[in-house]
Length: 90
Image (cartoon, rainbow, N blue to C red; front, side, top):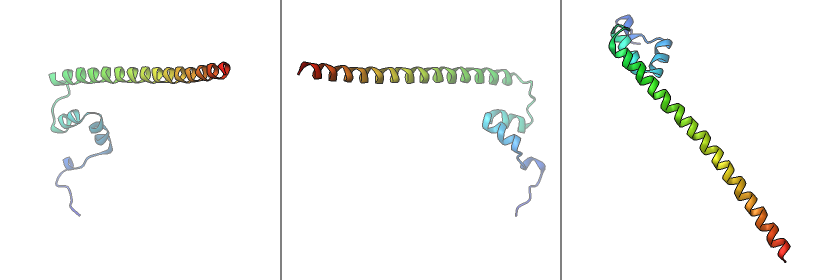
């Protein structure tokens, strides 16, 4: 079994969590970049923009689901109405 040459080769569970959230942030922190750098502000802005896009997509998905359900209900009502018309006309 290979032994790590230094402590930097060991990745902790919290680092994995940070990497899953934002690989760039994980890399910068692991590289020793100070957390008060100008790039951090840009990163925060990018995360906010991405969050806004995800919220918009979720709203659109909910709206699509509601419209799909309304369409199915209207189609079912139309079939019942057509059946009733055909039944009473004979």
